[in-house]
Amino acid sequence: MTELLSDTARKTVLQPLFDSGWEMVEGRDAIHKTFEFGNFIEAFSWMTRAAIWAEKWDHHPEWFNVYKTVEVTLTTHDVGGVSSLDAKMARKLDSL
Image (cartoon, rainbow, N blue to C red):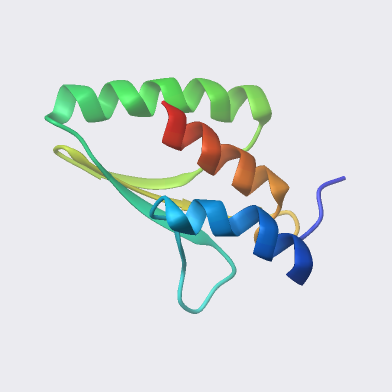
């Protein structure tokens, strides 16, 4: 079962994500990043690739798309905050 990241795990697991542009969301236990692409097709194609991984891992992001920008928020609703699944998904999104 997935669990919230401990304070120790947060320091080691989340710091590399913060270094790549992810941030904690103010007022909730979640991480957020804004992705910018060259145009709408690139943004939508990236979202499609991300959706395949989200479905495969049964861990779906909160996201918002306007033209070439995609805002992503990750949290594990089942445990009420950031878990290792969020870190895994964030790393995958960064690599797509």
